[in-house]
Length: 401
Image (tube, rainbow, N blue to C red):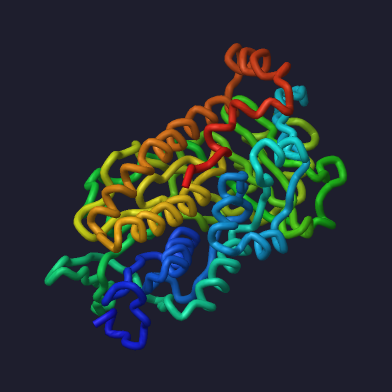
C-alpha cells in the first residue's frame, strides 16, 4: 500500500512516486509530477517543513521553470529584483566587473534575475503542493534505506515504518541516505571554505552599503556578498573565507571575532556590515565530484543528492528545480516507464549540472584571488561591457524543453 497511508490519489500510476526530502528540490519534484498527473508522497525528516539558510539568487533559467510550475506570480510577490551585480575589490574598493540585470538583461534572457529568501521560496512551493490532491506530505519521516520488491519501491524510515511506491526520488541533500546505495562515493568533499551568514531588517543596514544591487567584495581567500530580500524588507549577508575549521551542517553558531580577524584588512563598507551583526550562523562549504550515473532501477537522485555544488554560482536550488521539471516531462514522454525515464533524466542532466559544479569551484578561485592572480583577474574583467551576457548565457539560457 502507498506508505501505510491510504487515501492518496495515485494519479496516472497505480502507486505514487515516493520523494525522500521535503525541501526545495523535493517539493519542486512533487509539484512538477502533479502537473503531469502523477501522485507523490513527500517524506521529510524534520518535524516541520522549513528551510535553513538565508538568501539565494535565481537566474532567468529558474524563473522560466517557475512559469512551468505555475508559481511565477507567487514568487514575484516575495522576491527582490536587483538592478546590477557588482564585483569589487575587497581591499582597494576598485570596481572589478558589473552585470546589468535590468531591462536589457530581461530582453536577452526572456526572464529576470531575482533574489529570494530560501524560506519564502519553500513556502511558495509548499502552498502549491498543499493545494494539490495528488501530493501527500509527511514530516518526522527520515528515509534511511529502500528495497525494490515485486515491481515496487519500499522506502524504509528511521523509526521503522515503510512506504510503498512505484518509484523513489531521493532529494535528501548533500548528506543523502540514499546516494551511498546508488553512487557509493563516500563523504562529500570539504572545500576548506567557511561561510558565515546573517539577515538584517533593512532599517538596520548601514547607509554606506544600502542599495538595490547584488554586491560582492572579493579579496585574498575571502569574499562577502550582500543584497536585499523579501521585497526589499530584509538584507542578506554572506561572508566566506578559507579555514581549516570543520563543523558539519548549516546551523553551527559562528565566532564573530574569528570573522572580524579574517576581514581586518577589508574595505570600510565591509567592516560596517560586520559591526552590525552579533549572531552569525556558519556552515562548511562542501561539494562532490560530478558523476554520470545517479539512477538505479526505480530509484534516482535529485538536486544536491545527485550533484552538490559550491555556492559560488548561486545555482544549487535552480539546478534542483530544473531537475524536477525535466524528470516530470520525461516521465510523461516515456508513458510512465520509470526505469527508462530515470536513465534519460540523468543523461539529460549530468553534463549541465557537472558544468555548474566545476564552474562553481573556478568562480570561488576568482572571488578569492590575491596578489598577482588578483591583479590579473581585475585586469581581465575590468573593461567588460556590463550588458555583454555571453559569458553567462550557458547558464541563464536554461534548458530547452
